[in-house]
Image (cartoon, rainbow, N blue to C red; front, side):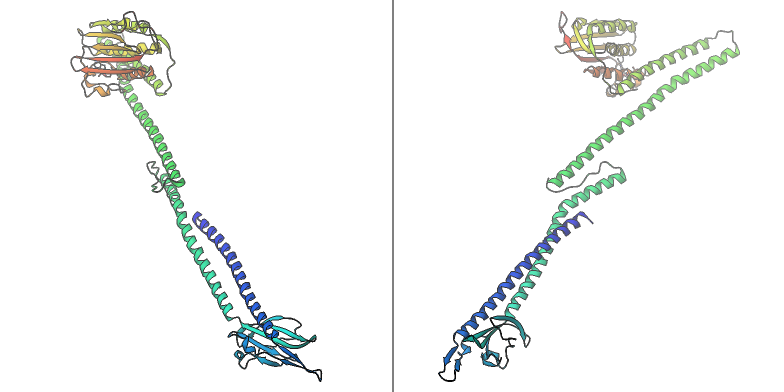
Length: 478
Ligand code: ADP
């Protein structure tokens, strides 16, 4: 049985029961009052008649003459009067009785007595009362009234109560059914949506609720909000899964070519050794050289992947106060070594003096080395590379600028993506992971990394890092 049916049946049942009790009480009270009125009326008339009976004493024979009043005076169209002698023989009757007789009173009543009888199919209420003369019953006065009007009134009342009650129950049941649907229908819609989602797996479905923001409205809204959260969580998971899948595909692709080179070269070396074990061959030297380069590339790739895999876990770096000047000294030393054949200049190092970054020393050095290595890689010999430091109150900016090949605008937005390499870089050795790692390190330190570049003229990478504590260097910010 549905919730709505139960509510409607429960309500209609209770209302019907209450109306039945109320109608029964009302009907009984009404019937009692009407019948009592009849009883009182006929008893009063009988008393009136009795009051006007005259007893005339006779001196002789101890007999008495009883003189009756004209009963016509006391009757009414629906009130019948009949006077009997103690033997039950009628001695007077009201004219409205015609030739009919009121039923006898039965045994001689000793006091007033009510009887309901039926005469010619008409229900009569009859009252019989004895009249005593010298303590001996002398007459019986009978008064009666037709119950037709009372019965008719009661019948109409009964019909009105039954029809009225039925109508009230039906109308209220309809109203309750309508009101119930106001909260049952949205519930049904919510259930249907949940079942649709279950069947189709489509988390974009929502409950279509149009109505006031009452309890049901709030429930529908909460249900939709929960679906929204579920959908977002699912989308995030899906995106992470997609990224992971792409990453794995990229990694496999990146690993395949150096491994092919290594396998091919080792194969070549083995064959050459088999054919002429003693002879030195220049081709062998070249193959060994290639193998070494491929292995180096592989280990750099694996190093980069390990770092990114760590980044992927989302665990923050363990941080400690790192003096920025030491990091930049180390970076400058290595930068000079990497520059080989390009002019290398360091400026504003004193701005880093005394400044402390909350972070990880090795990662910070790695960040600047990535930029310096790129500057050297993408700047032809004869160009120049600049490592410049500038300090503000709360942050330090470290710029690595070069006069190299630059990056075309269409590639700029992608260079921080994993494995992305601009076509101009294809001639140089690289994994495409450096800047992705660099950006992760900068972000882990609460900083940013930005790039400006002009193709053919050079690039400029700026790392901005918040300074945790410490005093600015003697010369301060430029
Ligand atoms: P890679 O190992 O290829 O250098 P990175 O992630 O470090 O990978 O750099 C991504 C790409 O950004 C490079 O392939 C190159 O196209 C471009 N790039 C990075 N630094 C420079 C630079 N200083 N000058 C020109 N292009 C650069």
